[in-house]
Figure (cartoon, rainbow, N blue to C red):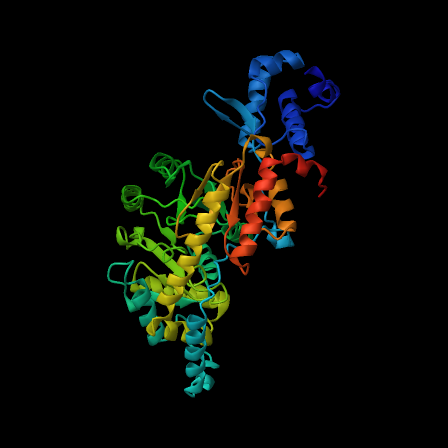
Length: 466
């Protein structure tokens, strides 16, 4: 083991005038960057490291403390100190690489349904309204569009209001506006330890700090959220409480009530990203029902109708706040497409959306059944109505989620590594697998076979270069 640290001795014994503990931290950082230290790798204990390097215990203790404050390592009672994983930097201001592989729903193959959708779209344009739809509109949608949004959210929200409703060009643009409105550069927004990668990209672009909360199977724990609120000023809390991306977990009503109570005590704004709200057959009551005066509730059509329908419905905490939010969104996107809005409104009014959701849900269930068959020997989380799952990698490949994901994507399998979602630099040994997209059920089953092949024969990865 001494050879593992042999290159450190010269650096520690050099004429460098910086403190020894700081040189030790820099050595740890360099080995992480070079790959000599791998994510989740355990470091020697303080006494063991001091003995190996012939240093004082206090010097090593100070170095470990500094390494923790710099986000290089972490510690847990009973497990010691270990290396944090490196997550994407999202340096968008300079055009950095961002993992934005989307989670697409399965496309329905019901000819009668597709014919009905086409007929309703044709009827919209045959009605002589095309010219009016090509003009500038006030932001937030027409009265008819807002009423359609109220109709859409009625099974979820208690007394949705047209005055608090904004029809927007997709959930992603709503998140950009809300973060820019609620937080300024340097402010803290609390998030789960795994989130939608797009939120990480938005925060990086705006200079907003995302602080990861301790999570369990339901999402952020109340203890960690309250500790964060006590320790510093928190601009907002972001949650994806139903069919969470990527874990598929759904927060219990008891946890939702506890979060609502804490938000009210600390006057904490909540961004409730309920993108998958309409996916489960049995809807789950949003947090917005519990603390409506603080919650910005948003859902849309991309996860229940089709990603090309960039139409989202934002229900704000109040009438005046709706106007302020409309101003923030208008400055970013001018307006949502009146054509898209009109199509969405017509399909909602005519019952086409409900039929589409039913068809997509049926296909998702069939694909989940196949996943259960192929992954019966592995640990994964999924919702029977959902179209993604969270697969825990077995021991032979648990240190290689990024390699596994990269390889499978070359085979046209919709897999994303846990690092893309991680906000605490400790990505778990897992990947998100998308069950949808343009693939047929047969093609999807072939993809499952490719995933299982890697899990059963991890040696296949050793011959792959990236």
